[in-house]
Length: 405
Ligand code: PMP
Image (cartoon, rainbow, N blue to C red; front, side):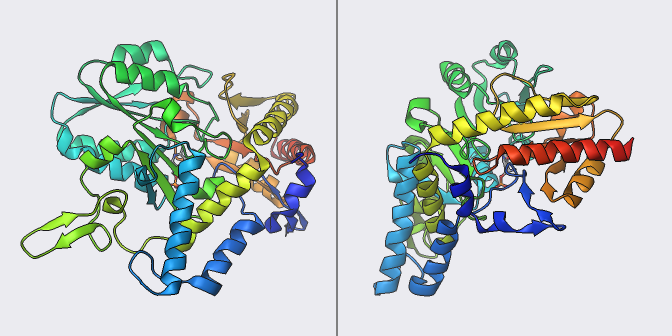
C-alpha cells in the first residue's frame, strides 16, 4: 500500500476534532497514541456481539471470545517473532510487566549480586528494581549517559561483572528519543551470564523488534503506545525464564488444582494471567498490530524520520532553543527548552493554539537532573502527523517565545 498520510488521517476520528477553536495537532504520541477506527470498532464489536468470559465456558459466546483473545496472542507472537505463543503474557501494560519480572527475581538474588539500569530510564523501569534491591540487598548500578543523551557503553562494560545478574534498559528513551544499542547491550550482558529485560514501551510504535534475533530474555510493552487501548500490554519472556519465575498474582485462571493443603499452578501463559483479563483490550491489541502492519513499519519509519529531520531543522533555527538528546540514532521525539522560559508556559500557550505537547520531566527525573533542568517541552510525532503540523508547532513556539520574553 502506498503511504498517503491524508488517507491515514481519515482512519483516526479524533484527528478531525478542534481544540480551542483550532484543528487539533496531536504531538503527544510518546505519552499515548491515537486509535484508528479499526481498533475502536473491534472493541465495540466485542461488547456488542460476543462479550463473555474466556477459557472457562463451553457456550458459544465464551468460545468465540476465547478464540479472538488467543488469536490476538498469536498476532503478538508473529509480530515480534516470538518462538512460542505461550511466551506471550498479556499484562496491564509495561509497568505491570516490569513489576512482574522484578517481583519474580526476589527469590533468585541475594546480597553481593548486582543489577544494572541505564540513566535513560522511565521511572517504571527504575522504581520496581529499587524495591527489589530493598527486598534482597542487591546493589543497583547505573550506565551513565553523555551530553548527547547516548549511553556510554565503555562505562557499561566496566559495570558488568560475574556479580551482575540482570540488566534492564529501554529500547528507546521516552524523554529524549534515543535509540539504545540493545543488541550490543544484550550480547555484553549474556557474556557475563546476566539476563536482560528491555522496556519497549517507546519502541514498538516506531519499529518492529525481532525478539528471537535479539536473544533478549524479557521484553515488555504497552498496547496504548501502538494505537491499541490502554490497560493492556505484553510481557515476552523466554520459556526457560517464565518456567523458573514464580507467579506474580494468585487467583482464578492461573491454577492447575486447588485444595486447602496445596495449589499447583497452570502452565504458561496462564500461570501469569490470574483473574479475568482485559479481554476486549487484548483482542483490540491484536487489531492495532494488524493495523500498523497494514501500513508497514518501513513506511512508518521513513515518514517519521522525515518529520523528525524537518522539525529539528525548523526548531533549531529558533534562537535560544536547545534540543536535548541529539544522538544520531533517535526516533521522532524532540525534547527542548527555550532559554529563560519554563517549559510549562510554552506548553500552555501552544495548547491554546490547538497543539498538544507534553511538558515536565516525562517520568524520567534522573535525565532532567543530568541536564540540570526541571523539565522539557516534548513534541513526539507519529506516522499520522504531517509537515503542516510541524509548521503549526514551529509557529506556535515562536509565538509563545514572543509572548513570554
Ligand atoms: N517505559 C517507557 C519508556 C515509557 O515511555 C512508558 C510510558 N510513558 C512506560 C515505561 C510505562 O508504560 P505504561 O504507563 O503503559 O505502563
